[in-house]
Image (cartoon, rainbow, N blue to C red):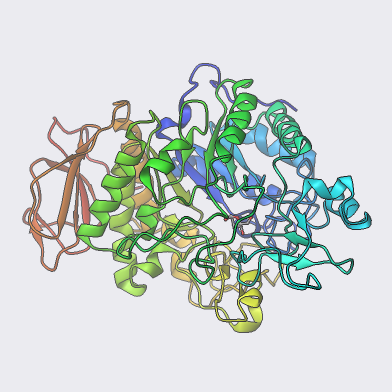
Length: 542
Ligand code: GLC
């Protein structure tokens, strides 16, 4: 137990410019052959992650769970589901990750639990009004027979956010009915979360990603949503549409006291950190989560939401930087995660999507602050159109099969070989089917191709390390032709051509480029890093 990374006490701020690799545990590597990724599979691939050049892992939930929401329905936050391994296996993973210099962060899911959590089971066994029900949001219904939900809140997975029990009471679930929301006005809830945090911090984890960090607190009045038809999903509103009315399900003012409590526990462990999933579009309200006594980092999803176009990308970058300026927290970038279509596909799929993803890698890694990298991003994994009968995400059923859900971006990682399961598993089937035709994007194939995206990522991560250390990491925009974005940050220039024709590169010697360059021009959908200082030896991807 208790495995500390070599310099946790020396470098307390290790996270301020780190690159985190998100391991969607079900899909990274399966060591026991059951078709689902696990902790041992991850441990066996630590050398791969070390060589990639990332700094830290974020491992998605591996706790005991009935897996209705693939682990985000936690039945015991202080254990390991046998599907993924056991506690000794987790401790070994932690020790070995630290030994190769990787920090390890894990998910905390404080907004809700699984319906199989002992607290909810107790609540179900009780009569209406019983004390165990107060840890959740139980209410009588509306209408004469109480047959209508207590308010008009919608679940982010579709349908009403309330489910009625046979005894007539309703309970709140912002996600699936199997994920009852906790009542943070009940003292047990914060106490139990602190216990969970200490449980993992004592083992040596370096921090947490906090699920639905903007959701925990609810106005006890549970006021109606002004427009229940709008935004039932976890989303930021369309920036071009008029500002929607406040959604009372999220970003309640009471949430900040809860984050201050979480921070106090973290502060008992110097060098630990938390990053929050914060879907709050308003910059000023977003910044509140990053005050010095709240979260260390907040995902800013504006880059992930921006189209591949110069104006929206520049706006996303500027707003993300401005929104944290008053807080002292660094910006925190994301291109893809387990909830959104992968960026290769968002950018147009096929050759175009791949080309743009190469450029996007250089764009994101040149920006100041923290980058979160989704597993397989380094291979250019696209989202996969899966057959209807393969879909497992609760969104598919809850939306009346109108939304396909998030399975497409959760397909297992292809490691080597010519056909499924591409060495992801020693078994023959995988929890989501892996498509034919992935042989060229496997890790093994890309290892052998000097021009592969994997090699580009490695080279970029190496260079990024060499150029960090300018803590302010300010972005200075350079004058550039229409369609071109060019900025300087941390002693480097990054140029991305989002226009319709090749454009002249900014001044400087090229350090790295997403495609081969000629005649001082940057082709369409390409990016380059340049320096104006005397260049270090040229880097050949490898
Ligand atoms: C977060 C997770 C998502 C999950 C939801 C409910 O948004 O990222 O995957 O379904 O919370 O826990």
